[in-house]
Length: 498
Image (cartoon, rainbow, N blue to C red; front, side, top):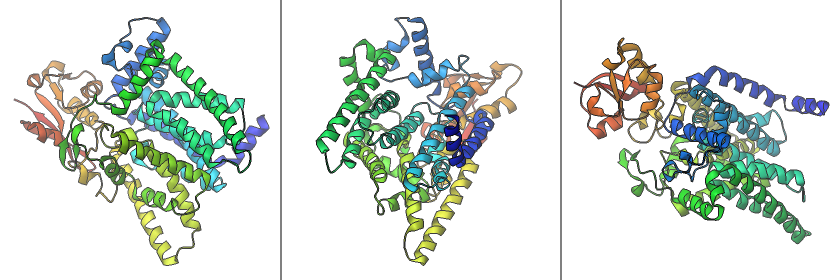
């Protein structure tokens, strides 16, 4: 056993080295991750569910419709279990440690394609250097873990192929499917993807017996995953047959959120989002080298694993066009597609390296990829730790899109505004400075160190903090005493109100 583990560690020493680097990065940067919108709400729902499990109180807020019982909070419940003091920094640390799973999965997916250990490191490296995904890992307790588990389940389906009727396969996939199903009901597509994969590997002989075996596997996997989901989700456990369809329908339309968002320089509502909304953000916020390589991957060497990942990607595009769901701020609900694009991009890079394309064309291709790669790294350094606000070089960068599209929609930059007021404006008496914020007021309160007071009544405030697009939309008045920059461009105004 020990010798086998040692052998695997030696074989995949590159992955071990990457993980050591990543964990060092996590421990040196987790305190820099800002508190963003939704975090307080999500973590408190997890805290309530934890109290329910510990105390069996029947009247938890968790069961009230106003507190979204149709949303599963098991992940944030676990975070609260290991963070009983409710420190946001510890939540960020836990999120970042959990995200390490996707780097391991990325490595082994590329390894399945290349069969070369060092080359397989491009998987975790490129995901780490794709800011539209990696920028979310510290503070996003819904979309980020869903993306991690979605890619993990795709890998496990591939890895357990041709195992026959296997107890190990059933248990592992049962537990893995359970976690995916719970974080977002969109995860139920994993059952369809399992069936599609079996059709990809359908043998020439004994097709009926193969499909019968996999049907038995899938039924038992489904039983385990849905059973675990039911006993860990109080709302589902109350009335499974009534509440499960309600959960799926509610999350398919999800019309609870109707905030205005910026799109192409205008504030629009959920009712007039154009059909190309998702594709616009995908095109503008994914690094150019990933877009180029992922497209190249489609046209060469269509192995089973590549076809499977392409199918998973296209299935979700189809579901988006079919259902037309409400999307919060940019690609937030669809960031799980970004790691898929990155892995396909890794396959495309290997295909491009091994292709017989004209040398001059290859040179041009290499030049574009290298320049895009360098520009992406530069953008991460400029924006960190707000690099989820990244826009690629095709779009003109984040600077060019601050008033055109959703950039810092999580509100992380409000931390800088709070720290400025705390260190430069606040007095010995906290009540001398009352601040109204257009977003994440609880985050500003956290970073205020109680040196000033946050108020939800704008008329009571003597300072107003607001992003410039929202500032203009609300037609705010008062002297601008400080402007906070994002990508070296004006983004948040701090106004003094008479």
